[in-house]
Amino acid sequence: SLVSPHSRGALVESVSVHCAEPNFVLAGRLDGSIDLWDIRNTMQPLMVIPPTAPGPSNVWEVKWHPRFRARAASCTENGEVFVWDFGTLDQTTNASSTAAERVISHDDNIGRSAINSFDIYANNLLACEH
Image 1 (cartoon, rainbow, N blue to C red):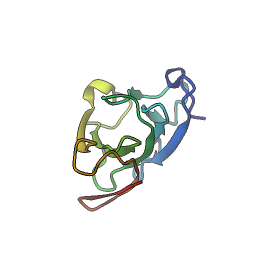
Image 2 (tube, one colour):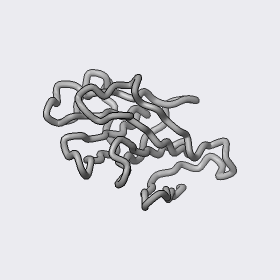
Image 3 (cartoon, helix red, strand yellow):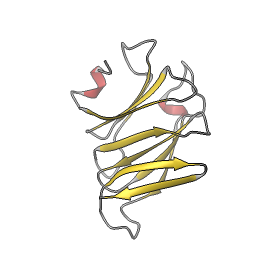
Image 4 (cartoon, rainbow, N blue to C red):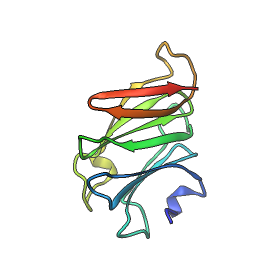
């Protein structure tokens, strides 16, 4: 069970198990946060990424990058896609070692449509807007 005191009851919308390191799991929540779990210790997540500005937005999907071990991506209700770089992926991973790059924003020319699904193929990110 991926329940954390940090989640404040926010439901999980998407889960992604790391393909090379199956102990590491990402959970995207409806409050806009993302939890990184090591399922060997389910008492609390390794880290909680808070909702991104300009305000909380449902995280519809999270996925680990298939080629870059410590990278993942997420898409949100407000039409944004982020690529996350966790630096290292081990028991010491924390929020201060994580960098985010907004690759699609609601400020781009795609309007304010939700991005509810995406896939990563080689170095390409394919996104579907709703």
